[in-house]
Image (cartoon, rainbow, N blue to C red; front, side, top):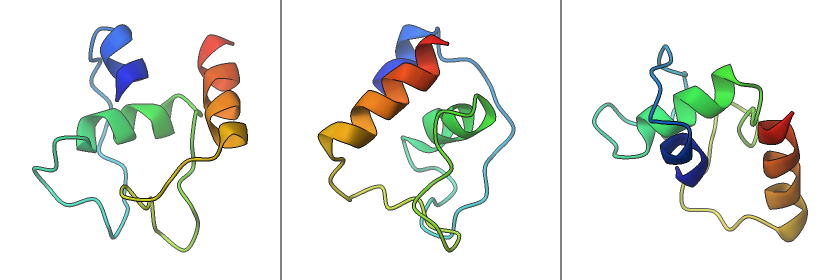
Length: 67
């Protein structure tokens, strides 16, 4: 969500995850991150919005976002 906001809250077509519901406040940010190749979710059609990100995952997101 922070990266999405820093990029001006750009629109992206909705991503399809079973645990991201229409109207979730982070839905647009997730869709943008998927469209930009920053994340692919956690597997099995899940994004796991309430999961804890490891330091390695955060570094990977930042690296992909800055390329």
